[in-house]
Length: 202
Ligand SMILES: Cc1cc2nc3c(=O)[nH]c(=O)nc-3n(C[C@H](O)[C@H](O)[C@H](O)COP(=O)(O)O)c2cc1C
Image 1 (cartoon, rainbow, N blue to C red):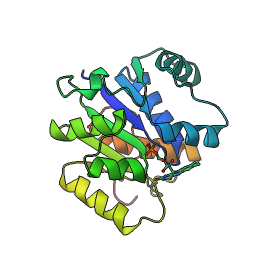
Image 2 (image 1 turned 30 degrees about the vertical axis):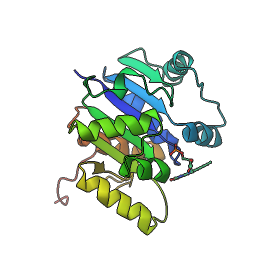
Image 3 (image 1 turned 60 degrees about the vertical axis):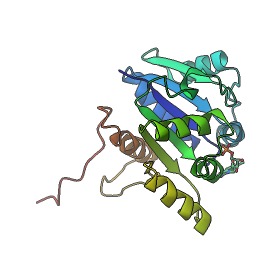
Image 4 (image 1 turned 45 degrees about the vertical axis):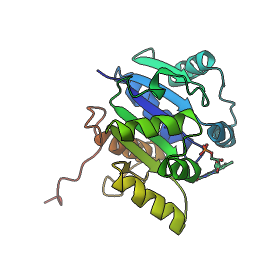
């Protein structure tokens, strides 16, 4: 199975990234992770824990935090544009950016690839691979909306992390997992099983 890239940018809801990595590894996927410079700040603001910058230490950190030895995990430095995944010749099934900041979204929309996340997003689009963006901002400005429209027209899947209430979630964790599973739906991955709408209960 080809690897999948998880880009984590500096928007709120870093837990969505964590749960995404967890479910992919648990299900034995090959996962490449890039944390943007902005995301390190937001991660520590939301967890009170510093995420290691050095790729090997960061991989150990995720392994320990997520308590799984399954799958394959490779972490990349946010500015390492010489990484394998920066090239279209390195095959992947695609990329999810979760959460996706408006800065990252805007730079991808303009083709202005400053860091490895933006370069990889650019590569997925040019190679016609799946690029799923989970933008988080509130409210959206017209610039954000136009950038999202532009990216949708270019082939990206705009998948904002919005919970559903028809699943009758009993906890925040259930809501989080539902949103993560819906991101995976874009790849048709057999991971977890979100409570899908089956029509009204008779
Ligand atoms: C605690 C915190 C929460 C933030 N939440 C958001 C957010 O939800 N959406 C967003 O677009 N930017 C958010 N930002 C701002 C981005 O982190 C900032 O624009 C950063 O430069 C984005 O960099 P990146 O796109 O390279 O990750 C937040 C910043 C902080 C410190």
